[in-house]
Length: 490
Picture (cartoon, rainbow, N blue to C red):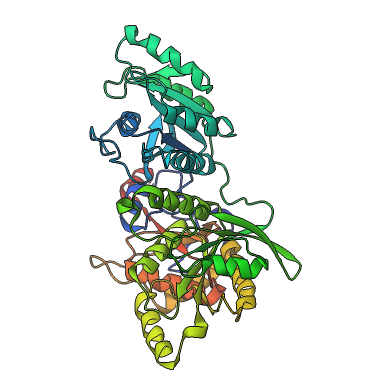
C-alpha cells in the first residue's frame, strides 16, 4: 500500500494528497526537519527511510578499517587511534558515491590472541556474511597476509556475499608489488589503497558499487520455519527452555553462568508446526566493555537477533529485574523484532516476590507495555505451552498491514477528538498517513508542522488500541511539509 492510495474520508484536519499538497518525492517534504523529530533505527538511519544496501568493513586490528571508513564517508566520523582494538562494536554510517547511497558498517577487529583466534574470526566474518550485502576485507599490505587474515579469508571464501580485498597502506606505485602477494588469500584481485592519503580510494569505491546491489537483501523475507531467538542475561534458563521445547538435551545446561557461547539452532515441532529456536549466549555486560569470548559471543547474539523474527526475552522472576535484563531488552527493541517476555523460574516465586515483581514491571518495563508476557518454569515445564500462542500473536502483529483508507478514516476521528498541541501559536495539521512498512509496522504522517513527542506517543497508543499491535513495536515517522518549497511551487 503506497501513499498514493485513496482515502475514504477527509476533513479539515485530513486532506486528500494532491489538493493543496504534493506527495513525498516532489521536494515539498523536508526530510532534514523530519530527522530532527523522529526516532532513529539501530543503524543510525531515520525510521521509515528507504533501506539502503549495507557494506561491512572487516579485518584484524589496526589495519586501517576506521581510516578507510572515514575515507569512504569523506568525513572524519569513525574513531581512529594507532592502538589495536579501538573499535569494539559495529558502528553504522550513511555514505554515498557517484549518486548512490549505502550504509557502511565499521566492525571491531578481533583479538590477536591464539587461543580465541578461530572463534573471534568466525564471529566477525559470520556477522558480516549474515547482515551485509557486500564485504570489504582490509589487509595491511606492508605486513602481508597473517595467520589471522588467512583464517578470515577461509571463512569468507564460503560466503555467497561479494567480498572485496583491500590492500591498505599502499602509499606509492613502488609499494603496489606488495599488494600482489595478497592474491594468496584466494579472494581475487587485491585492490591497492591508502586509506590515510586517499590513494586508490576512488577506484576501490567504483569496484564496491559494481558488486553492491541497488537495494539491500530483504532481511525480513524469511523462508522456512519462523525464527525465534531466546535472549537474556546468563543463567536465566534459556538453554533449559530450549531443551524443554525440544524434548531433548540440545543445549548444555549448568548452574554456572555463561555455559552457552555460540548460538544453538534447534528445529522444534509443536502442535504440528515447526519452529526454529535459537539459544543465544547470555550478555553479562555492555558490549563496549566486554572482552575476549564475551565480546564475540555478544556479536553472535546480535547476529542471531538480526536473523530472527521474534525474540523471547527470559527474565528470572525469582530475582529483581537487573540492568542486564534492561540492556538485553534495549537490544531487542532496537532490532525491531516482535517480543515476548517470559518470566522464568515461576515455581520459585512466592506471594511477596509476586507483589514486588508487579511493581518492578510497572517501573522497569514501562517502555514495552505492548510486549506479551508469559509466566513459565523451564525446569518443570509449567505453562511452557503458553509460549506458542504468545509468539503467534506477536508475529501476527509484526506482519500486520492497515489499509490506507481505513488508517486515514481512523486518524481523522482521533485528531478531531484530540487535536495536536499548538506550537509557536499555530496548530500543525496532519494531512495524510500511510503504512510504509511491516516487520515492524512503520507509519508515516505527512504534516504541516512539528508533532510533539508526547502527541506521537498518544497516537501510537491509540493505534495499538484500535488495530491490536500486541507483541510488536510500532514506529511512527513524521514528515513536515517544506513551506518555502510549497510557496515556490505556487
